[in-house]
Length: 132
Image (cartoon, rainbow, N blue to C red; front, side, top):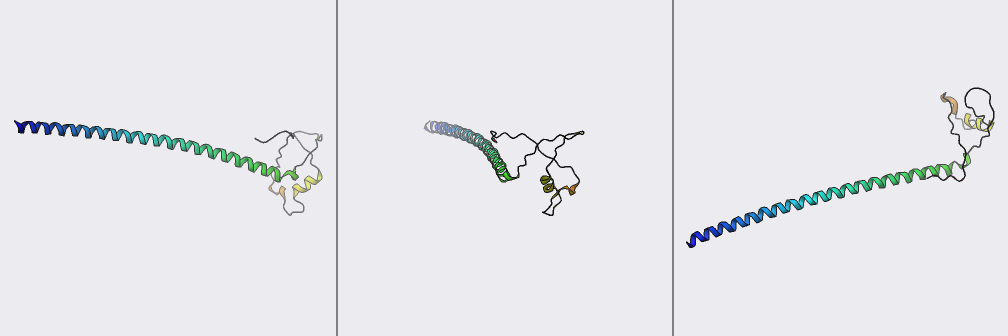
Protein backbone atom coordinates (compact mmCIF):
# COMPACT_ATOMS: atom_id res chain seq x y z
CA UNK A 1 0.00 0.00 0.00
CA UNK A 2 2.70 2.42 0.86
CA UNK A 3 4.24 1.90 -2.55
CA UNK A 4 0.93 2.55 -4.37
CA UNK A 5 0.36 5.61 -2.24
CA UNK A 6 3.88 6.92 -3.03
CA UNK A 7 3.42 6.29 -6.77
CA UNK A 8 0.09 8.14 -6.84
CA UNK A 9 1.57 11.01 -4.82
CA UNK A 10 4.51 11.18 -7.21
CA UNK A 11 2.13 11.20 -10.19
CA UNK A 12 0.09 14.01 -8.57
CA UNK A 13 3.25 15.97 -7.86
CA UNK A 14 4.46 15.55 -11.45
CA UNK A 15 1.04 16.56 -12.78
CA UNK A 16 1.08 19.61 -10.53
CA UNK A 17 4.58 20.52 -11.70
CA UNK A 18 3.57 20.09 -15.36
CA UNK A 19 0.53 22.35 -14.84
CA UNK A 20 2.66 24.96 -13.12
CA UNK A 21 5.21 24.71 -15.94
CA UNK A 22 2.49 25.10 -18.60
CA UNK A 23 1.01 28.02 -16.66
CA UNK A 24 4.39 29.72 -16.33
CA UNK A 25 5.03 29.17 -20.07
CA UNK A 26 1.69 30.79 -20.90
CA UNK A 27 2.39 33.71 -18.57
CA UNK A 28 5.85 34.11 -20.09
CA UNK A 29 4.42 34.10 -23.63
CA UNK A 30 1.70 36.56 -22.61
CA UNK A 31 4.30 38.85 -21.05
CA UNK A 32 6.48 38.63 -24.17
CA UNK A 33 3.47 39.44 -26.38
CA UNK A 34 2.60 42.44 -24.21
CA UNK A 35 6.22 43.62 -24.29
CA UNK A 36 6.32 43.32 -28.10
CA UNK A 37 3.03 45.21 -28.44
CA UNK A 38 4.26 47.91 -26.06
CA UNK A 39 7.53 48.19 -28.00
CA UNK A 40 5.62 48.38 -31.27
CA UNK A 41 3.43 51.20 -29.94
CA UNK A 42 6.51 52.99 -28.62
CA UNK A 43 8.31 52.64 -31.95
CA UNK A 44 5.26 53.94 -33.81
CA UNK A 45 5.00 56.90 -31.43
CA UNK A 46 8.72 57.65 -31.92
CA UNK A 47 8.33 57.39 -35.70
CA UNK A 48 5.42 59.84 -35.67
CA UNK A 49 7.30 62.24 -33.39
CA UNK A 50 10.39 62.07 -35.61
CA UNK A 51 8.23 62.75 -38.65
CA UNK A 52 6.71 65.76 -36.92
CA UNK A 53 10.18 66.98 -35.90
CA UNK A 54 11.39 66.66 -39.49
CA UNK A 55 8.36 68.53 -40.81
CA UNK A 56 8.92 71.33 -38.30
CA UNK A 57 12.66 71.45 -39.03
CA UNK A 58 12.01 71.54 -42.79
CA UNK A 59 9.45 74.31 -42.34
CA UNK A 60 11.89 76.33 -40.21
CA UNK A 61 14.67 75.77 -42.74
CA UNK A 62 12.35 76.89 -45.53
CA UNK A 63 11.42 80.05 -43.62
CA UNK A 64 15.09 80.75 -42.90
CA UNK A 65 16.00 80.29 -46.58
CA UNK A 66 13.15 82.57 -47.63
CA UNK A 67 14.12 85.23 -45.10
CA UNK A 68 17.77 84.97 -46.11
CA UNK A 69 16.77 85.32 -49.75
CA UNK A 70 14.65 88.33 -48.95
CA UNK A 71 17.45 89.94 -46.95
CA UNK A 72 20.01 89.21 -49.66
CA UNK A 73 17.78 90.70 -52.35
CA UNK A 74 16.66 93.80 -50.46
CA UNK A 75 18.70 96.00 -52.81
CA UNK A 76 17.30 94.25 -55.89
CA UNK A 77 13.70 95.29 -55.29
CA UNK A 78 12.40 97.17 -58.29
CA UNK A 79 9.51 99.52 -57.76
CA UNK A 80 7.66 99.91 -61.01
CA UNK A 81 5.22 102.66 -61.76
CA UNK A 82 2.01 101.79 -63.64
CA UNK A 83 1.96 103.07 -67.19
CA UNK A 84 -0.93 102.95 -69.61
CA UNK A 85 -0.01 100.85 -72.65
CA UNK A 86 -2.60 100.45 -75.36
CA UNK A 87 -3.22 97.01 -76.83
CA UNK A 88 -4.33 93.51 -75.93
CA UNK A 89 -3.07 91.69 -72.84
CA UNK A 90 -1.41 92.75 -69.62
CA UNK A 91 1.72 94.80 -70.06
CA UNK A 92 4.26 96.50 -67.84
CA UNK A 93 6.59 99.22 -69.03
CA UNK A 94 10.05 98.71 -67.60
CA UNK A 95 12.48 101.56 -67.03
CA UNK A 96 15.54 101.62 -69.35
CA UNK A 97 17.90 100.69 -66.45
CA UNK A 98 15.90 97.54 -65.75
CA UNK A 99 15.82 96.66 -69.45
CA UNK A 100 19.58 97.09 -69.65
CA UNK A 101 20.08 94.85 -66.64
CA UNK A 102 17.73 92.20 -68.07
CA UNK A 103 19.59 92.25 -71.36
CA UNK A 104 22.79 91.54 -69.45
CA UNK A 105 24.77 94.57 -70.54
CA UNK A 106 28.01 94.79 -68.67
CA UNK A 107 28.19 91.20 -67.42
CA UNK A 108 28.43 89.48 -70.81
CA UNK A 109 25.37 87.26 -70.25
CA UNK A 110 22.31 87.57 -72.44
CA UNK A 111 19.18 86.81 -70.42
CA UNK A 112 16.99 86.99 -73.53
CA UNK A 113 18.97 84.38 -75.50
CA UNK A 114 16.61 81.57 -74.46
CA UNK A 115 13.83 82.85 -76.70
CA UNK A 116 11.18 82.35 -74.03
CA UNK A 117 9.16 85.21 -72.54
CA UNK A 118 10.13 86.69 -69.21
CA UNK A 119 7.89 86.05 -66.24
CA UNK A 120 7.42 88.58 -63.46
CA UNK A 121 5.72 88.36 -60.14
CA UNK A 122 3.80 91.56 -59.56
CA UNK A 123 2.33 92.39 -56.21
CA UNK A 124 1.36 95.17 -53.87
CA UNK A 125 3.81 95.58 -51.02
CA UNK A 126 2.36 95.46 -47.52
CA UNK A 127 4.92 96.73 -44.99
CA UNK A 128 3.02 95.10 -42.12
CA UNK A 129 3.14 91.61 -43.67
CA UNK A 130 5.32 89.09 -41.84
CA UNK A 131 6.20 85.78 -43.45
CA UNK A 132 4.79 82.93 -41.30
